[in-house]
Image (tube, rainbow, N blue to C red; front, side, top):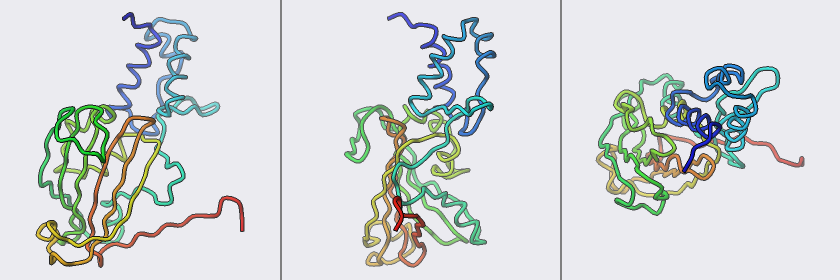
Length: 234
């Protein structure tokens, strides 16, 4: 199959965005710069950028240029928190303790909570606040949407913080349930019967799954607060 020049430009730009090389909010090269680099007409560059705008990867700002799109929630009540930032804002120390990290190839260890669209990284770890377990995290990251995750060192930075800074997403879904600590009791340093808050979250970029995460918090250590306004007035 012959790849046209606009498809090649689109692929090059998309690769830089998906890999995290170009983070959300970064200004991409101007159309003239891209024309000079690829030695092509403005129409060709415009077609490539237009396709990425349609996918939600790039946003155009009048008189400012084109930028890597920042993530936005579609009709979600809860924002996606950066647990590290939440803990540090409370004046506590923070670290992420990586328990396990493994590569799951397409078709391996299928999980109905995460579409099998290719290779995934599976991560288990504990968020620690002031030397006390704050939450256990189990996460799957799709490498098609976030290829840079394959080389990221999650011993230095939590997966959630890394994703928020490096991988734009367009849709998020949350599910919040109550559960007992159960088999996570040891990791959380609590009794198996302790009441916990379980937050599950899915994010996508258009049709591509970015991540699924399940975070379990001891019930006395985390509050979920959402502030929002009515859409159509009182």
